[in-house]
Length: 452
Image 1 (cartoon, rainbow, N blue to C red):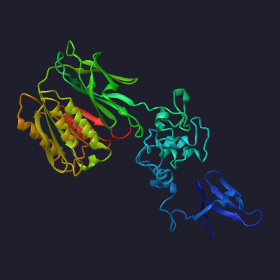
Image 2 (image 1 turned 30 degrees about the vertical axis):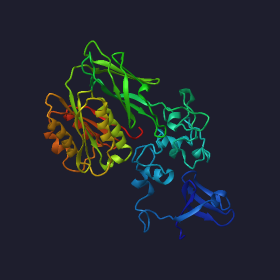
Image 3 (image 1 turned 90 degrees about the vertical axis):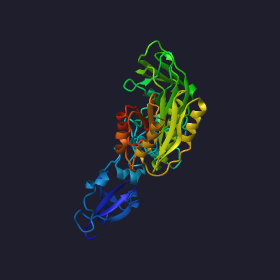
Image 4 (image 1 turned 180 degrees about the vertical axis):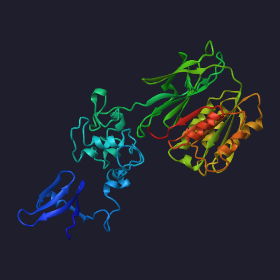
């Protein structure tokens, strides 16, 4: 073609034809980045499989790309930092260039891809069927269960490094008869030494909340009851009354054991064979009756990734931890704010049930007037005007405010109240919600909806 080289492709990579021989031996000269330059016979299998692509045009000539392929930012960008370029994720592997673990199995995309080709010692083990070992049309990087044994790959590959290491107790992702059950990533999230819980009078304690992580891969859902957890405060067994799943966490409503002093005391939580302890996490100090308003975000962004359900369960937990003679109300917000349950004195479980029913009836839709929602909740407290009570608001949101008034607009008028915040989802504005809790002497909770 007027002495211009041709681009050709064999499945797997692109080469350049820059010459040929018409007389014996009949050959084509290939510039192959895999094997270097070589002469290949016309009749060879590799030539028969060639796909003819286009005339190669050098950079800077008419019709050529604006720059050499190696200089194109789109080729070398890696948006999620997982070690696989965006181009390869989109064009070759069909993984998500903005997520390090496209199949939510806890093994990162790069390790998933490498495991189909190499062992950890570098031994080459590729066969065409290995990438889709269970023949379900999904390559390993897109298949949470590569060998169809119902165990997520990240539970079999315990250290998620893309290799089978039986000495570590791992099972084999390429053997359906070899599999491990998932072990939750278990630890206490709240309370901690730096953010303590007050259990009230040591001789007549009041309920407290405990938040723990129970994260497992998406396709291995777990369900726990109060009987699955054991809680000890200062070495004294403290019954778990109810539990509420919320994203990758559980909120436990705990009845603290009596103590001979105010502490602080260590908190230990056990789930099956796993246990975690937070030192000096709980103290005992008599407190006033509490007026609490749960402020729920019911905007459209909460409809995604299970955020609204996680918020409802967390809100239910904050209601159920209240004691008789406390007061409870519910407000919510989307484009506008509303009162969903006026402030009621808790005279028994029916009041808690009614408040939780109001929370559970919310539907996510609309924009996010977070500031107006806070004002609505605060109005319930000021209207009751129980100045001898402690005032508390619990704000549950992803923090994506986009409708005035904003938090910054209303914050100066929110006084004499402790504000706890619960941030929901990986995309939550945690900075905003943490700053709200910090400014109003409250505690910040985070609920991860997505796998770690």
